[in-house]
Image 1 (cartoon, rainbow, N blue to C red):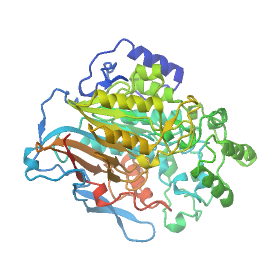
Image 2: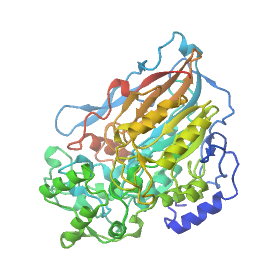
Image 3: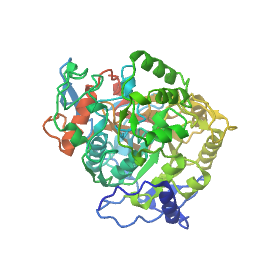
Image 4: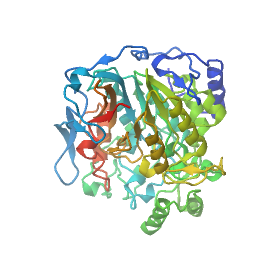
Length: 582
């Protein structure tokens, strides 16, 4: 049976409330969520599934796992890494040597014999910036490509196949490569979708929990977007046109666009998963405050595909300096270019979703998969209109998921006073436990203090203030985030800030994180990067689901203007991060 489901927000809201009301206090083992006060919150039994959900996560009462003597390197970047062949032109990928594990001792000294003594406390995987994208969406600003590589990427039409291949890789991992502990859950740290579109949200939830996805909107029979526009600004994969990408060596691939909108089947994750929200999830274009015009234009029948380089540069410069957070200039541009736009098939599924509709969709039993129901969100999140929560990772280890998006607009983030106070209360209440904090934005990208339109009198708080708060609470071990699309690990005041690269830009990674007690007064956080399960070398004649996932990676390597430093330095990749046990 198809798992595409309804995207009607009213229906989702009703189903979610019926599914969660009355379930307060029911434990879901390791995946039991915690409410705003830090106590047990509602959880529910998942509905029967057509396929196996895989082995259940170990309960939180399980004894500590003794670390393995030999690391399980297979399937991780400790073993092999996708490596470009050649230095110029359109490059192919092949198998290269893995990245070694780097010991970092900025926060604690390394004691001899710790590997023999240590026990594992937690093991999980971080996904971030999947950017599952409807490439035919009318609100996309691909025409800014001349100004920023992030406006349009040649690989984006294959984002669903790429995400499913990453899920297949994680499902196949035998456990944590450093400790051998079972992988207990996956946490996504935002920008799960790209255009704040209901269709994208449905595709994301189905990919994570399992089912069939048709990554197409508009015309059911054919693609309607910039890649068959005949415009040389974009790669035209099925056209003889010598577009700007083919001049760099991009191939012609007949059948590419039909394959890109063909059904994709996801096995879903075999372990529980949790969700954190990002700016692309709740803001149109990831940068504009929600408004009536954007909702109307998103479902309409016109799409702007070209703009003069001068106009595009001016528009992008204004976005970067947060000069148009409400999108008024963007709206004026779209209204003034209606006659020159391409006609496309209207589709209500492209409508934007609100933050509460994001929560409601997660609470839909149809998307429970391996659990927990709501994937961290509960009926309390709906009732209190908040997208932050805490959850139990393991005995003595608490997870906290923050909402760092500023609904006033712009792609940088911040926290409101209510959330900051909730965070401080939660850290204080759990002072005797280890705490791992998750958010989308990094400390350096939380400088947007614009008021939230829903709470105009509430003060906003930036990254420096959040870093200071986390540093005051000695139970905080790590702040884990994304947004920057780059691997970066920074020692802070007693904890580590771990930022992970995206899965849309090369090198397309996720991160396994393991926590272990060394029984010598120190703790170790192990970070290990993983790639998708797709073959390194793409076969341009193979348009199967696996072939498309391989092509997704190869195209991302060759994206013109893409940053080449996103893998970070060796100390930002596979690491052992030492901390003093406090």
